[in-house]
Image (cartoon, rainbow, N blue to C red; front, side, top):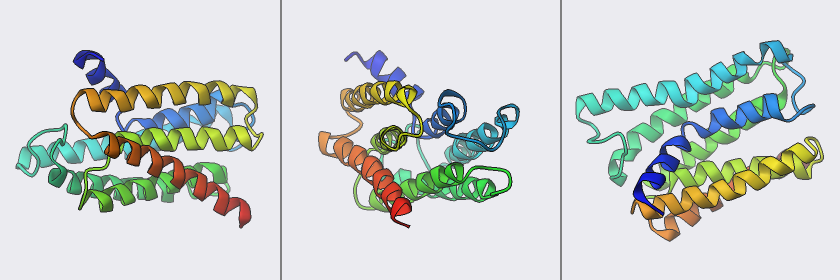
Length: 209
């Protein structure tokens, strides 16, 4: 894979952008999965997702760059990832709190954001010792979510199409991270495994509960 393609894939499927993509798919591309809010008002869900999972963490990381706490927005150094990841975990948590309004939002939306918050928090904790792939965690989580929705029968065939697509994309993004020498194969696979396992485990726990 060329470095240009690897860079584009890494940027387009940045871990802070994946949540917005997933909320868009669930709200607009999988009929019947979400009942509340009604279709005309679902922009509010996307606004919360984008603002707190991409906008705020990105601004915070840019400020850290200006203060010299990080040397690059790419965060290639493991030790420099800690504060941006902690900020992201807190921001994701606020988004989950905002979506915990049963009279306004389906429980699925809160559950999605809660799972994402936990994934970022675990990524932060692991990163204190080892450079796990955040891209892998994000793509693994996306795969796990779409697999749950398809296997649960709630989303039907549209979810299968998205599931196949995300499987291919996860492989491409993982390959991109390796092509850029951003991670070792073990770090990429660990990220994919953490994201997928966390979502499937979270879903199983909710089903049993």
